[in-house]
Image (cartoon, rainbow, N blue to C red; front, side, top):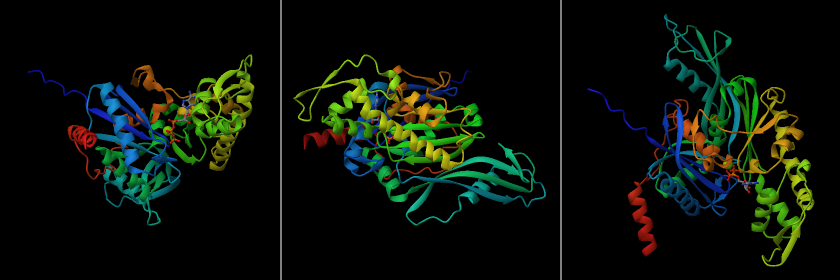
Length: 416
Ligand SMILES: Nc1ncnc2c1ncn2[C@@H]1O[C@H](COP(=O)(O)OP(=O)(O)OP(=O)(O)O)[C@@H](O)[C@H]1O
Ligand SMILES: [Mg+2]
């Protein structure tokens, strides 16, 4: 009798950004992500720099983004892979060692878990916790560069790890927020690493490259070399800063400045065309205002230059500025959508730069979901498939409710 294969499980990735919650729902078939639907909801009042400052407001944004994705994908979900970020995340590298004291010195998965646990054992302030300990590479009897030690023999097993720590309070608040929205968190994952799973190929990780996620209020920088993440940092500047500069520089409202930035903004002087003026409104939202692209450029370029200068300084400080030269800079995040961003990055960083795109063999998705604004959410779908990311920090959210309870509660709230 033929066995009927189970349909692939529906999974969801929710990226809580600095001003927006994005959600993608998909299925994985044969290692390929098929995106069923997506949604996004802005949440300026509930989030600041990736940190939840208002739980009910952010929970409502999570519900809106997920329900939009559920409607687009014609499915319902109850648990999510959660992308977290923010200035409270810190990272550094550490090393762990483990003696194999048995007569048969063949390394088991238990030995690998033990050496990684040793590398995680660091003194931490009481209000901080480890979010990830990402193995960078193993050594066997001081021989470095062993990618998969299980089954090999040695008496000393060592591991280098990239540790990411988070403020326990900020992490709890984002988990509470998702629980309040009615979903269970399968795993919280640093958003930058999730985007890296999607956009940085194993070859690029080996060659050396920098992933630059330009969000609204922050830039997340990830440095990859020798096949692993070596350095990561949250830089407190993002594309919203350009909007703010435009609003104050051109004396217009934030909404008009955001529209000007998206429709007419550019990040490199080579894109200045015939300087034909664009129409907008003054700060009152009514008085007509004419803005020339050259005026726009005079405001945008200094901020873009500052953003990439901060990235360049961080690369220098990491000690990997040379190591990332072969693969160059891979840009993602909504801020990377501005025309000329890759040229500006290339000029300031002195590296080849390009917009990161998911490999077409790994992703099947409508054009809309391939936007860099969804790369973290899509990366989370991929993370759900890898044992590296699953299970280690699984935590059940306090009060996850099934979709029908959520919708009934929302309906009742609407009535009373
Ligand atoms: N077409 C565009 N051109 C220029 N900027 C854009 C465009 N589309 C979106 N942005 C900007 O991208 C930013 C939002 O990007 P994204 O959604 O990646 O941020 P986020 O995930 O909320 O923030 P963060 O990653 O900092 O936590 C906003 O500043 C927005 O104005
Ligand atoms: Mg983001």
